[in-house]
Amino acid sequence: MFQSIALTVGLRYTRAQRQNHFISFISLISMLGLVLGVTVLILVLSVMNGFDQELRQRILGMVPHATVQTAEPIMDWQQPAKLAMQVEGVVGVAPFVHGQGMFNNRGRVQPVLLNGIEPEAEALVSILPNHMIKGLVSDLKAGEFNILMGDLLARQLGARLGDKVTLFLPEASLTVAGIIPRLKRFTLVGIFKVGAELDANLAIMHIADASKLKRLGGGAEGLRLKLDDLFTAPDKAKQVALQLPGQYWTSDWTRTHGSLFQAIQLERRMLGLLLMLVVAVAAFNIVSTLVMLVVEKQADIAILRTLGASQKEVMGIFIVQGSIIGFLGTLIGTLIGVLLALNITQIVDWAEQVFGFKVLSAEVYFISYFPSQVRFEDVLFISIGSFLLCVMATLYPAWRASKVEPAEVLRHE
Image (cartoon, rainbow, N blue to C red; front, side, top):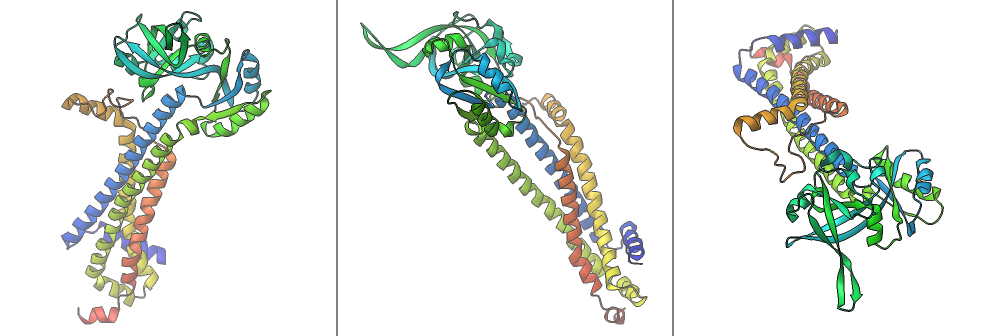
């Protein structure tokens, strides 16, 4: 009985053309506000997910997921690499030598992070071979002191392929002429572009050359690990360290770049919360719509109560009507939001071509397009959350309607 009266009368009130056009206008505004809020929330969270994914792929494709190091140089890295690969979750291992220095070219000086790599093993742990815009990783030859640079670093130094650049190391050598800084000439044989700060401060050389510069006797400082799950990095690194003979210490991306991703996650949550408030405002506009409707329909409510309708049945009528507004607004907003999120890259590209401006400049940002990643769980959470807010917004007006006294209303009719 409750279901039939609530649905029948509630649907009739929704479909009927009201005499009070102001209430109809407020209902339309409530629905449009809900559509806009849900659309923007899905779109913004999808773009934030896209940026987060791009950062993971680009930065964590270059920096180590995890590393294990020892005090003594690792002379035969293949043997500990085999032991490390036996740990579940480790999908790639390669040796490395890290350092810092300063490049000088034609009077331009730039600080730099140095990575010594084994070219043949680098593809196992890094996306570097896929992001070379000039030259190849295989151009690094042991003993030739060739080097690869990030695109921004090369431009800041004014260096081109084949140029000789001078590396200053943070050490001093004692000679007959006195104490002078250590320096070495390198030949630029390749340029890579992966994005973010890495293009401006990273240079890569052969591990044999890096070992000579750091006087490691041809050995490696440690092993770089690539994992199938980034978030297991601290535990997997410890497992590898325990698997290897000798004393090893570990590091992972949560220590070196964890703050960056935490900041992105915090920003994503805060934007989601703020936009959810927009949805809440739109949802609670339904309150004013239904309160005015209750006032308009007091005579109808009184007649229904006289004919035997209970308070719950009267509440159900207005809950149904408000829920229909919320359902339609949430559904339309979800469809538009998902559609825009799936095509935001093409939409922004079209706008840039038509209006002649760049939304994201490659000179400033690490990508020049709007990435987007639509996650089903986000869409589901937003849709269900928005609809529940709308249902909650109907409770007070429905309760007010149920408290209408038939005798008092009909006396004035």
